[in-house]
Image (tube, rainbow over all chains, first blue to last red; front, top):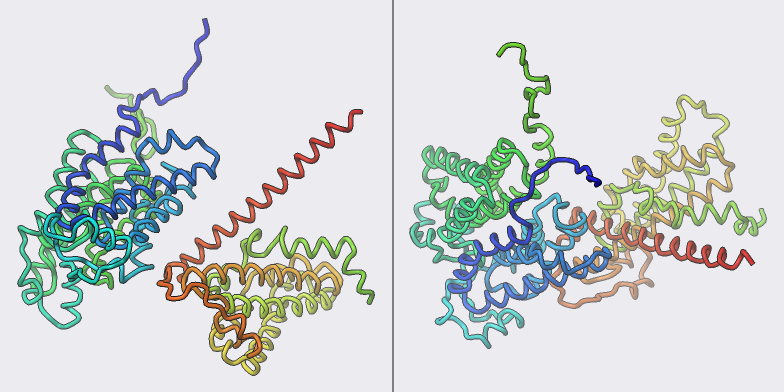
Length: 352
Length: 234
C-alpha cells in the first residue's frame, strides 16, 4: 500500500468558487431588479449587453491563453464582473459603453494578469474609472427615474440603448454632482439640498448609476452574504465607519460645507463598494487587521476625494488606490505564526 | 569607404539588433519617459524619434572618436557633456527650422540628454568600437526607437482622436499634408489612451505582440530543426 504524502495546509475549502460567485450574484439581484424597475427597459438592455460581452471577452482571452474555456466561464466570475460593471454605469448609457467597460474589466483588469485570482486591481472598478476618464459625457448623464411601466416601451428602449436616441431623456445631476456644481456657484448646502429626501435616497428612488441607488437593497444583500460567511465584516464596517465618523466630524464643524453622514452613506457607489467591491478576495488584504486598515483607507480616500476632489464620486479611485497598497498591507500585517510571538520569536514555554 | 560593408555580417547584426532583436523600447524597455510623454500623436512620435536618432548617431560618433582619450573613471560625465552639447545643437536647430514642432516637443527636446538609451549606447557600444560601426549602431538603434515611437503614437492617436499623422506638415513641410488622415470622422475618442496610463497600456500590448511574434518564429524554426533531424539519420 502506498500513501502519497500531501503537503499542508490540510484545510478543505468550505465553498467552491462557482458557489461563492453564484451567492454574490444572488445578493446583487435585488439591487439589479430595482435598477431595472426604476430606470426601465434601457437598463435591462444595458445590463444584458454588458454581461454578454463580459462572457465573450473572457472566452476570447481564455482561448488566446490556450486554456479550456468551459470551467472558467461556468465559474461565474466573468458574469459577476460584468454585473458589477453594469451596475456602476448610468442606466441609459449607450450599448458600447457596456461593451468597452466589459472589455476593460475582463481583458485589462483580469486576464492580462493571468486570470482569476491574479489581478492587482478590482476589474469592475478599473473599468468604471477608465470609462469615467475616457467618456466623461456618457458616464455622467444621469436620467430621471422612469419606472418600467411609465417609461419608454421595449422598442423605444432598443433605440435608446443601441441607437443612442436619448432625445426624450430628462437628465439631471446626482446628489454628489449637485453638491459639486452648487459649491462652484457659491451656494450653501441648505440651498443645494432643499429637494433632497433622505428616505427616498435610502430606498433608491433617485438619479444615479443603474444598481447603486438603493442603499437598503444593497445593504440587505451584503448583510446576507455576511451571515452566510461569504464576506467578513471587517472591510465593510471599517469603510463605512470611517466615512461616517469623518463626515460627522466635518459636518458638525461646518454643516454648510460638509455633507452629513446620511447623505454620504446613501449617495453614489459607497454601499455597493463597501459590501461587494472592497471585499473582493483577490484585491483585499488577507488578515482581519489588514482588512480593517484597507477598509479605513478606502473610507478615508473616499471622503477626501468627495470633499475636496474634482470628481463628485470617488469610491472607484479610492478602491484602486487601496488595491495598489494591498500587497504592502499584507507585507507588514501578517498573522502570528502558531507557536511564535508576532515578532517571530518562539513562545516562551519555560514557565507553565 | 566601401558601401558594401553595410551588408557584411557584423553590420547586418547591428541593424537587426537595433531594429528588432534588441529594440530600445520593445526589448530593452528603455527611454520610456519620452516615449510616454510625447507619443500622443504619430507625428510627435516621429519628430521625437528623429531628433533622438540624430543625437544618437552624433553622440556615438563623438564618443567613439574620443574613446582613446577618455579616462575610464570619469567617462560617464564626459559622455553626458558630449550628449548635452549635441542635444543643444538639435534643440536650436529645431527651434530655428521647425518652430511649430518645437513648440509641441519643446519641453522634451532638452530632456533627450537624460534619455538613458543614448548614454546606454555610448557606454555599451560606442566606447568600445570604431567610428563607423558606432554611427551605424546609433542610426539603427535610433531607427528602431523611431519605429516604436511612431507605431505607439499612431495607435494612441487613432484610438484617442480618430486621426493619423495630424500636423505632419509642421514636421515635414507643406508637401506632406496628404499624410494627415482622419480615419474615423466624428469619433468620440477614447481619452484614456491620450493620457500616460493609456500609453503604458498600449506599450504593454506592443511588447506582448513582439514577444508573440518572436515565440511564433522560434517555434517555427524549432519545428524546422526537428523536421531536418528527422531526415538526417538516413
